[in-house]
Image: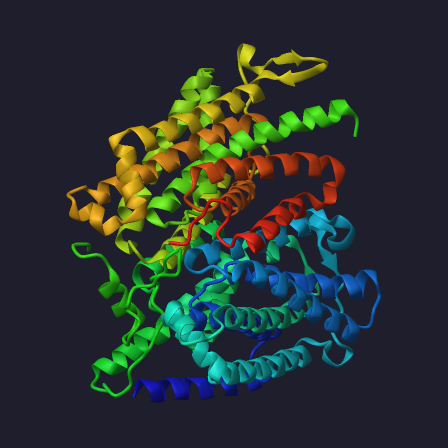
Length: 348
Length: 287
């Protein structure tokens, strides 16, 4: 029943997204476009965090490299928009290869720590390398492709690219590669024993994820016509992770729902609330304390309680250890149950 | 670069390294024992610095400012560990994200209370003067920070190697469950360790506020440096934190003079090189 509801919701969402410029004002169409941009980023984060079980905290940095490359080659080097987009994607790929090579031999929270430092270094570089990035002023006047200059044309371009990204990521997570990634999430040592080249799999996942972060960076640069250090820092990376968590890690739909929730909250509440970062921090704390299994995880667990026992859900647990020795909770059950079962005895 | 500038930057690098070491040692000890990556550590630093500033302005007593900031942030750490982190014990990623939320709130509250203008802690009396080292005139306070860093490193090392509490901590790093089974109150040990890390961040804030400046965003900036220190040195290792601080401090000091537009990229380079050679940092071990 819940599954049916999710399907119905998805169909409604697709129809709304298709008709959005005809239904609501340009402002809300823009919010819808933003949702698509960040949903792409959140899906790329979710590929690593949800399917591979390694949560990156620096993906806004990779996204930012793409946006900055796009901005630099359009506004400073005066390349054509299409050529600049190609270079930007290449830059995002090269950055992902470099960052991935540094991070993928580690596991657990140390992976998160390394990616966090990488993302923040991009942010620091954006501040200091003023010849290219314009420092605090950022790069202004990033032109959209000529066929998508207006807000509603751009909405459809974003929708098209988002749909292509969804399809590609759906193919990835349902391919043998995607299954291997989930195997690594459940037990890295077991996959290694089975003869899988674990490091290579992790590296490939990082590249794919980084590429889609780069794609979202293109859309982000075009949407705002502007990029500045504030958009590539820890805050942006952490928001993307929060989107994955709120929606539900280990699913493709979860990050999209999470992106919609966060983008709406940001756009609507930031108008009325003065102390905005405090509110965002509070949302982080409350989500983590009370809703860390995510919306999709909650719905699935709920649907299982209703007697639909045949559908067992494999979700990522939050149990990482620095050395990648994960407890044997890697069977079936919702993330929340895994979390509870894996705790030390005698704890609340 | 003249020899004078080279020598001056060497001293600047050493003193920055000492500051980073005090901050990073708290971070890495908490990480080593509890596996918690506390991203509010930068927020603890910034609020500690501001608290020290306020106490100093009110009392003109620098020592009191340091003690007050350390105690205040330790209390904040106690609250954080007891009420926010304890319910999440073992869920590493959830703990990380919770500390991010806390870092947002701390940064924003600092902005609300102390305003957005950069603030500098003015040192009272003779501690704010300069000393003559050969032909360089150098602020006495930075030498004091260097000495403090070395002293704190020594004290922590002695506690870890020579005392019962230190033995408990080392055992906790190796095998939490066995330690608990032997009747040690690991829960309390965690709380104390977290408070101690927060205390170190608080006093670093006061020290840092006197030779760097305090401003909105300084929390994440210093956190980045501490993270790179811990990544280079290896998480959980005190020796690693010391070595990592030296590498980052010196490279940053010289990089700022030689290639100012690449200030952050210069610390990225050693991190990339060391990680390709040792994925868990110089002294980090794969558990």
